[in-house]
Image 1: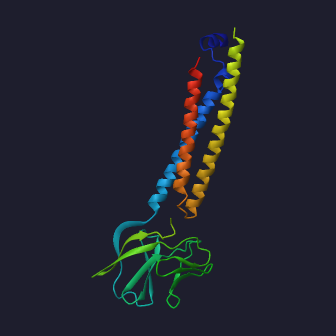
Image 2 (image 1 turned 60 degrees about the vertical axis):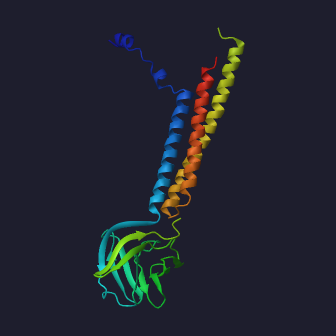
Image 3 (image 1 turned 180 degrees about the vertical axis):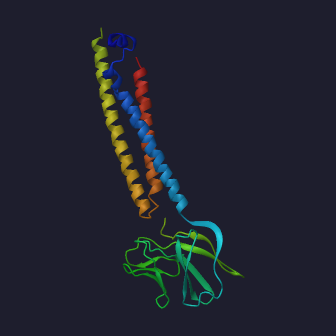
Length: 165
Length: 78
């Protein structure tokens, strides 16, 4: 039975498993193309992360909900994206992601210092643009884009900081 | 029966194959390093390295394809 099978299917295992230099070169060139495609994909992804991203507008507070020097926590655009709304000067509203860019501790607003402070590792961010003032955070806080309308303050998008270049 | 001249040509082609294969492997190691470095930088929030790394990686892939085409042409020659 085995002899008959060998005659009908004369497959030499060693020959079948042999990889020639040409085949190996082809495979490695294919792998090289795959790596290049992956790198192009990463580059494209890095571009989409930059700049402003617009989301569905959401009302986050009324005009009288935040007093001058005060702050208010909210979530935007997803429920788990915690943010903080502040009013450093009368009529001037700013909002930032509340997650410290170091290890994601929630930041607090310090009106007298005009900064957002992370108590975990003494990181601090400017209230003007979310840029890093001190401490270990590697980059600025994402800023929530606001629109002040007649019926309240609306979040309309998120802008990544200037150091995301 | 293979002539002496033909054997000499085979040896030369084998040497060319090995050299190009080594260069091919070097370029792929460079591409893997670039890919890993880009990922590391993206996770750290640094987006500026992604495009130059992608350009270099595409050039490496192009050189590899060019070498493969060259090998096929070399094999077709009598």
